[in-house]
Image (cartoon, rainbow, N blue to C red; front, side, top):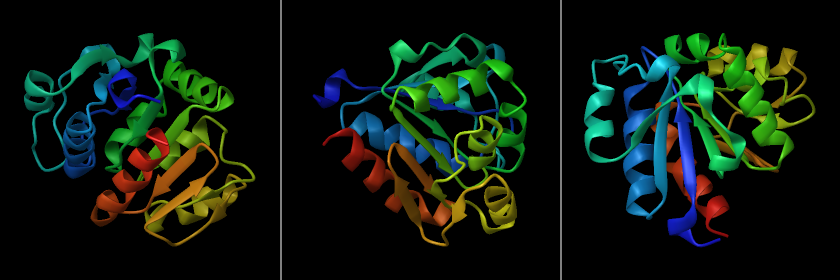
Length: 180
């Protein structure tokens, strides 16, 4: 698919893992891929270590309401970590329905760090190989997935990564998948 025709949404909330939002947004834009950031009620949230989402929205990405997402508008969804943000995001029924529908339509669903919590709550990782922050490995296993302790795991249209230090490997896998 032509890169400049691609559109990705990053769904997050207050307390996101700063580098797991900043780097993917800039890296995708660098590739000519359009990016939206979705938060509940389009709130301009702040990262775990204080990065204001407003800076990314000002220069690189659109801001949309996470409760109003439509599958037809996106080629991929990314759920970044930070233990607080994914826990907030997985409590939004519309987000879970969106992620589940993206997966059902074989669109790319990707999550980093604690982000797989959203995939668990959307009930889409049973029978899959996945990774995530080591502290949620039991959650991943209990959801019926095979936990793999690697920087990035690709299983069909699911890409997962375990830690902020793995964001480079994550983005290489994501861009390779999108641009094949």
